[in-house]
Structures are given as structure tokens and as C-alpha cells.
Length: 125
Image 1: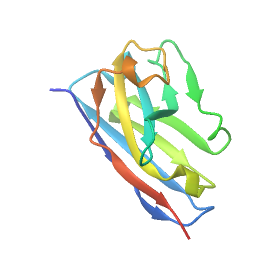
Image 2: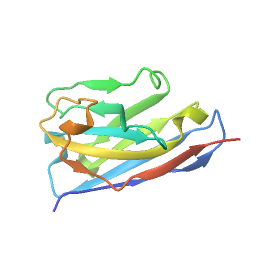
Image 3: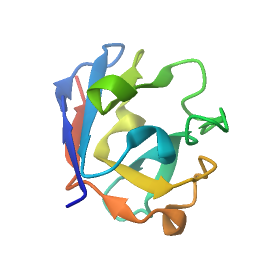
Image 4: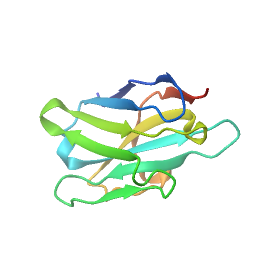
């Protein structure tokens, strides 16, 4: 049974940092692209940071997070991380991790097969 479970969300002041974790099970992580997506109230889900399956070696970042967010994976621990620094109120939303077998790390949510339940991140003073 494929599962993705996010953790590490919460509330933080502008300029602060959070690290999200996506714990995966039921599949071989290095065969999967993993993407982090976020959805703010009334807005569409957008790709924030996406990592292709290991052999392809590609990473995508949305322009709004380049230089502030870093996606990384520990295949031995079956976990993917999203380090978020210099957070802004515009980063507020529900963050989801998603998996696509042999994926290229696309920011298109429709490409992904499996999704976590999501976790809230709130950036506010």
C-alpha cells in the first residue's frame, strides 16, 4: 500500500524557517519523482519544488521559492524533505507531497499518482 505522510508544518514568523518531511512507504523511493505542492485558500494547487526519480537527476523550483527552498531526498530513509528558509506570508498554505513513478519532476499536479494528506504552513507576524 503506497503512503506518503507529511510532517513538520506549523506557524512561523516572516523570515523564519521550517523543514517539511514526506515519509513514504509501499514503493521504492528512488524510482519515483517526488513533488512538493502547496494550495492557498481560493487558489489552485501549485508545484513548489519537485525532484525527478534518482536516475534522471532533475530538480524544479517555482520562481517564487528559488534560493529559499531546497528539496532533498534520503532514499535509505524513504523520506523527502523540503527546507524552507526566509519564509514569507505568501508561502502560507497547505503543503502536499506527491509521487510519480519514473517521473521527471514535473510541477504539473496532474502528472502525479499518489498524494499525502497535506499539512498546514502559516507564515504570519
